[in-house]
Image (spheres, helix red, strand yellow):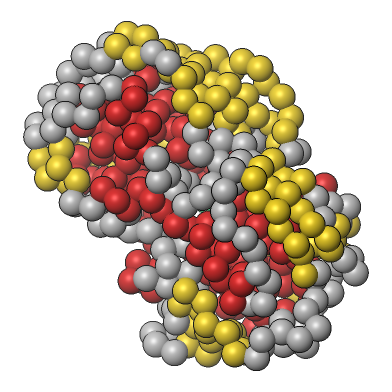
Length: 425
Ligand code: S3P
């Protein structure tokens, strides 16, 4: 099954989470901000277009973007706004916070996948703050109308660990000028907090509560976006499952809330080194050198899930190459991502001849067996498409993806980069 010899280096696209936040915070700043290394993909373009609709224009996304911020509070916000967040949950939930703070009526909508994802989790804290929420279709799903303005302070404990919900509430407090406190059941990615703190915002963690005291304004800044560890994970799987060689993944974000996949990879026997470790834009960054190595199964428990929540499709493919059983538990949130990723990985692995079983909150994969040629039902989910493209290249077995272009959501150059490393069967 292992046949590849890998070598070379890749510069991966900018981190998706940080790119969304850099755009939003630049648009809320006072003066001209510069963003370097932003991810230019369908999701971040949805955020850029939505910010413009909200009365905060940002230029087209490129290697360097200059954003003239319009300040925390618009003097004349547009009265009626309609946002198309397309496939992007981050756009919908973060900008819901902005919309709630603004004296406007904002209709938030998205594609069929986003319409199926839970929005009550962000609507609830915003309505506690005084925003009017009206469901235009099914209760709890987009399209959702947000009547903003006149917000009050909130202390809100989220039911599920969600960086999007936490960030939406922080942004609502920031833009409305009211203090907010958020508590989460498990720590989630903390980019919003780090970025706000680097802008001088008074944001502290006290007794498990993240407390924000809003400033009158936030300054313009330079934002440097490191490479996305969630995109890097696919190539880390390719390198690890090769017969020989190694791949260098340059400038990857190494924030501990994003390196859960690397910790599991190590437990499974994966071998990698970090070179040139540094701090860039307030975040740990380094060059990852990932080596081909034998693998054994591992167990991933609920408390680890937030730190690798986007890497589970990649992990499932890794598990197909590992000797023995790999089990993921406590990952029920995967059912409400861009697709039901628990079902998608198990069904597609089985099509490829891999023994796999689905649980309500996870799955088990028995790896090390042969892969057979199959048609892959990506469900239009970028991470399912990339995971199975890696399985195909790593095994040398043709796998036909039904919608390969969905990778544009987070990694438009994925197939070009993949073809540079190894032939696509
Ligand atoms: C994200 C948070 C996570 C993650 C998503 C990006 C963010 O979602 O899965 O890809 O940028 O805040 P949840 O907040 O729904 O866990």
